[in-house]
Length: 253
Ligand SMILES: O=C(CO)COP(=O)(O)O
Image 1 (cartoon, rainbow, N blue to C red):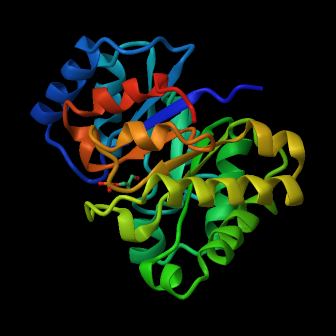
Image 2 (image 1 turned 180 degrees about the vertical axis):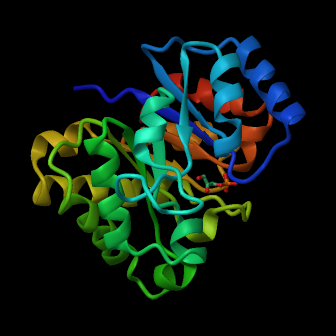
């Protein structure tokens, strides 16, 4: 089964009303491959989700950047999965490294969030990735396997999960993983899914790369057989995001 290329734009904690309108206008005017070829999902901060949903072209979708781990209630400052569903927001990013490190979200907490969001009908972009220290000590695979295991233990149906491999040392640093580095980890992750979940999930789950992806480096990365798309930070706020979407048509090696 062919895996449809997936390009996500994580706007993080950026934007004003005017800037958001400008980005959406650029996206709406862009000529990109059809929805059969590439799935495009943009992720504005919560407060901008309603206006983005109203303005955005119908072939692009919207993701939240987080949601609460369980049913909503007395959790000041949180946004629940039910609220996202109520607003017809189809996707949510969970386990981003900025939340793992700055807000101490553990593997188990992220696993619980993924399971709860899925149970409410959301689709999930689940993020994993090692720090520079972990890479240099040779524990990359152990780290991403443990992060994936915490998700796999709580998830029975992977249909609505996209796995985003985002090495922490590559995020916002301009230091992109080489295509070979990305391919190596993606292939290992696929093997991990094969051995620990099942062959079907390993073959069908999209594993996307994130970390300093831009208009210039996306094609080489997209050519790798196990790179099924991107989760883009900084460049998703710029017109070059269109070039990244277009890399969906790059021929695989
Ligand atoms: O964290 C990221 C996407 O979630 C990547 O961010 P950058 O593309 O800015 O490195």
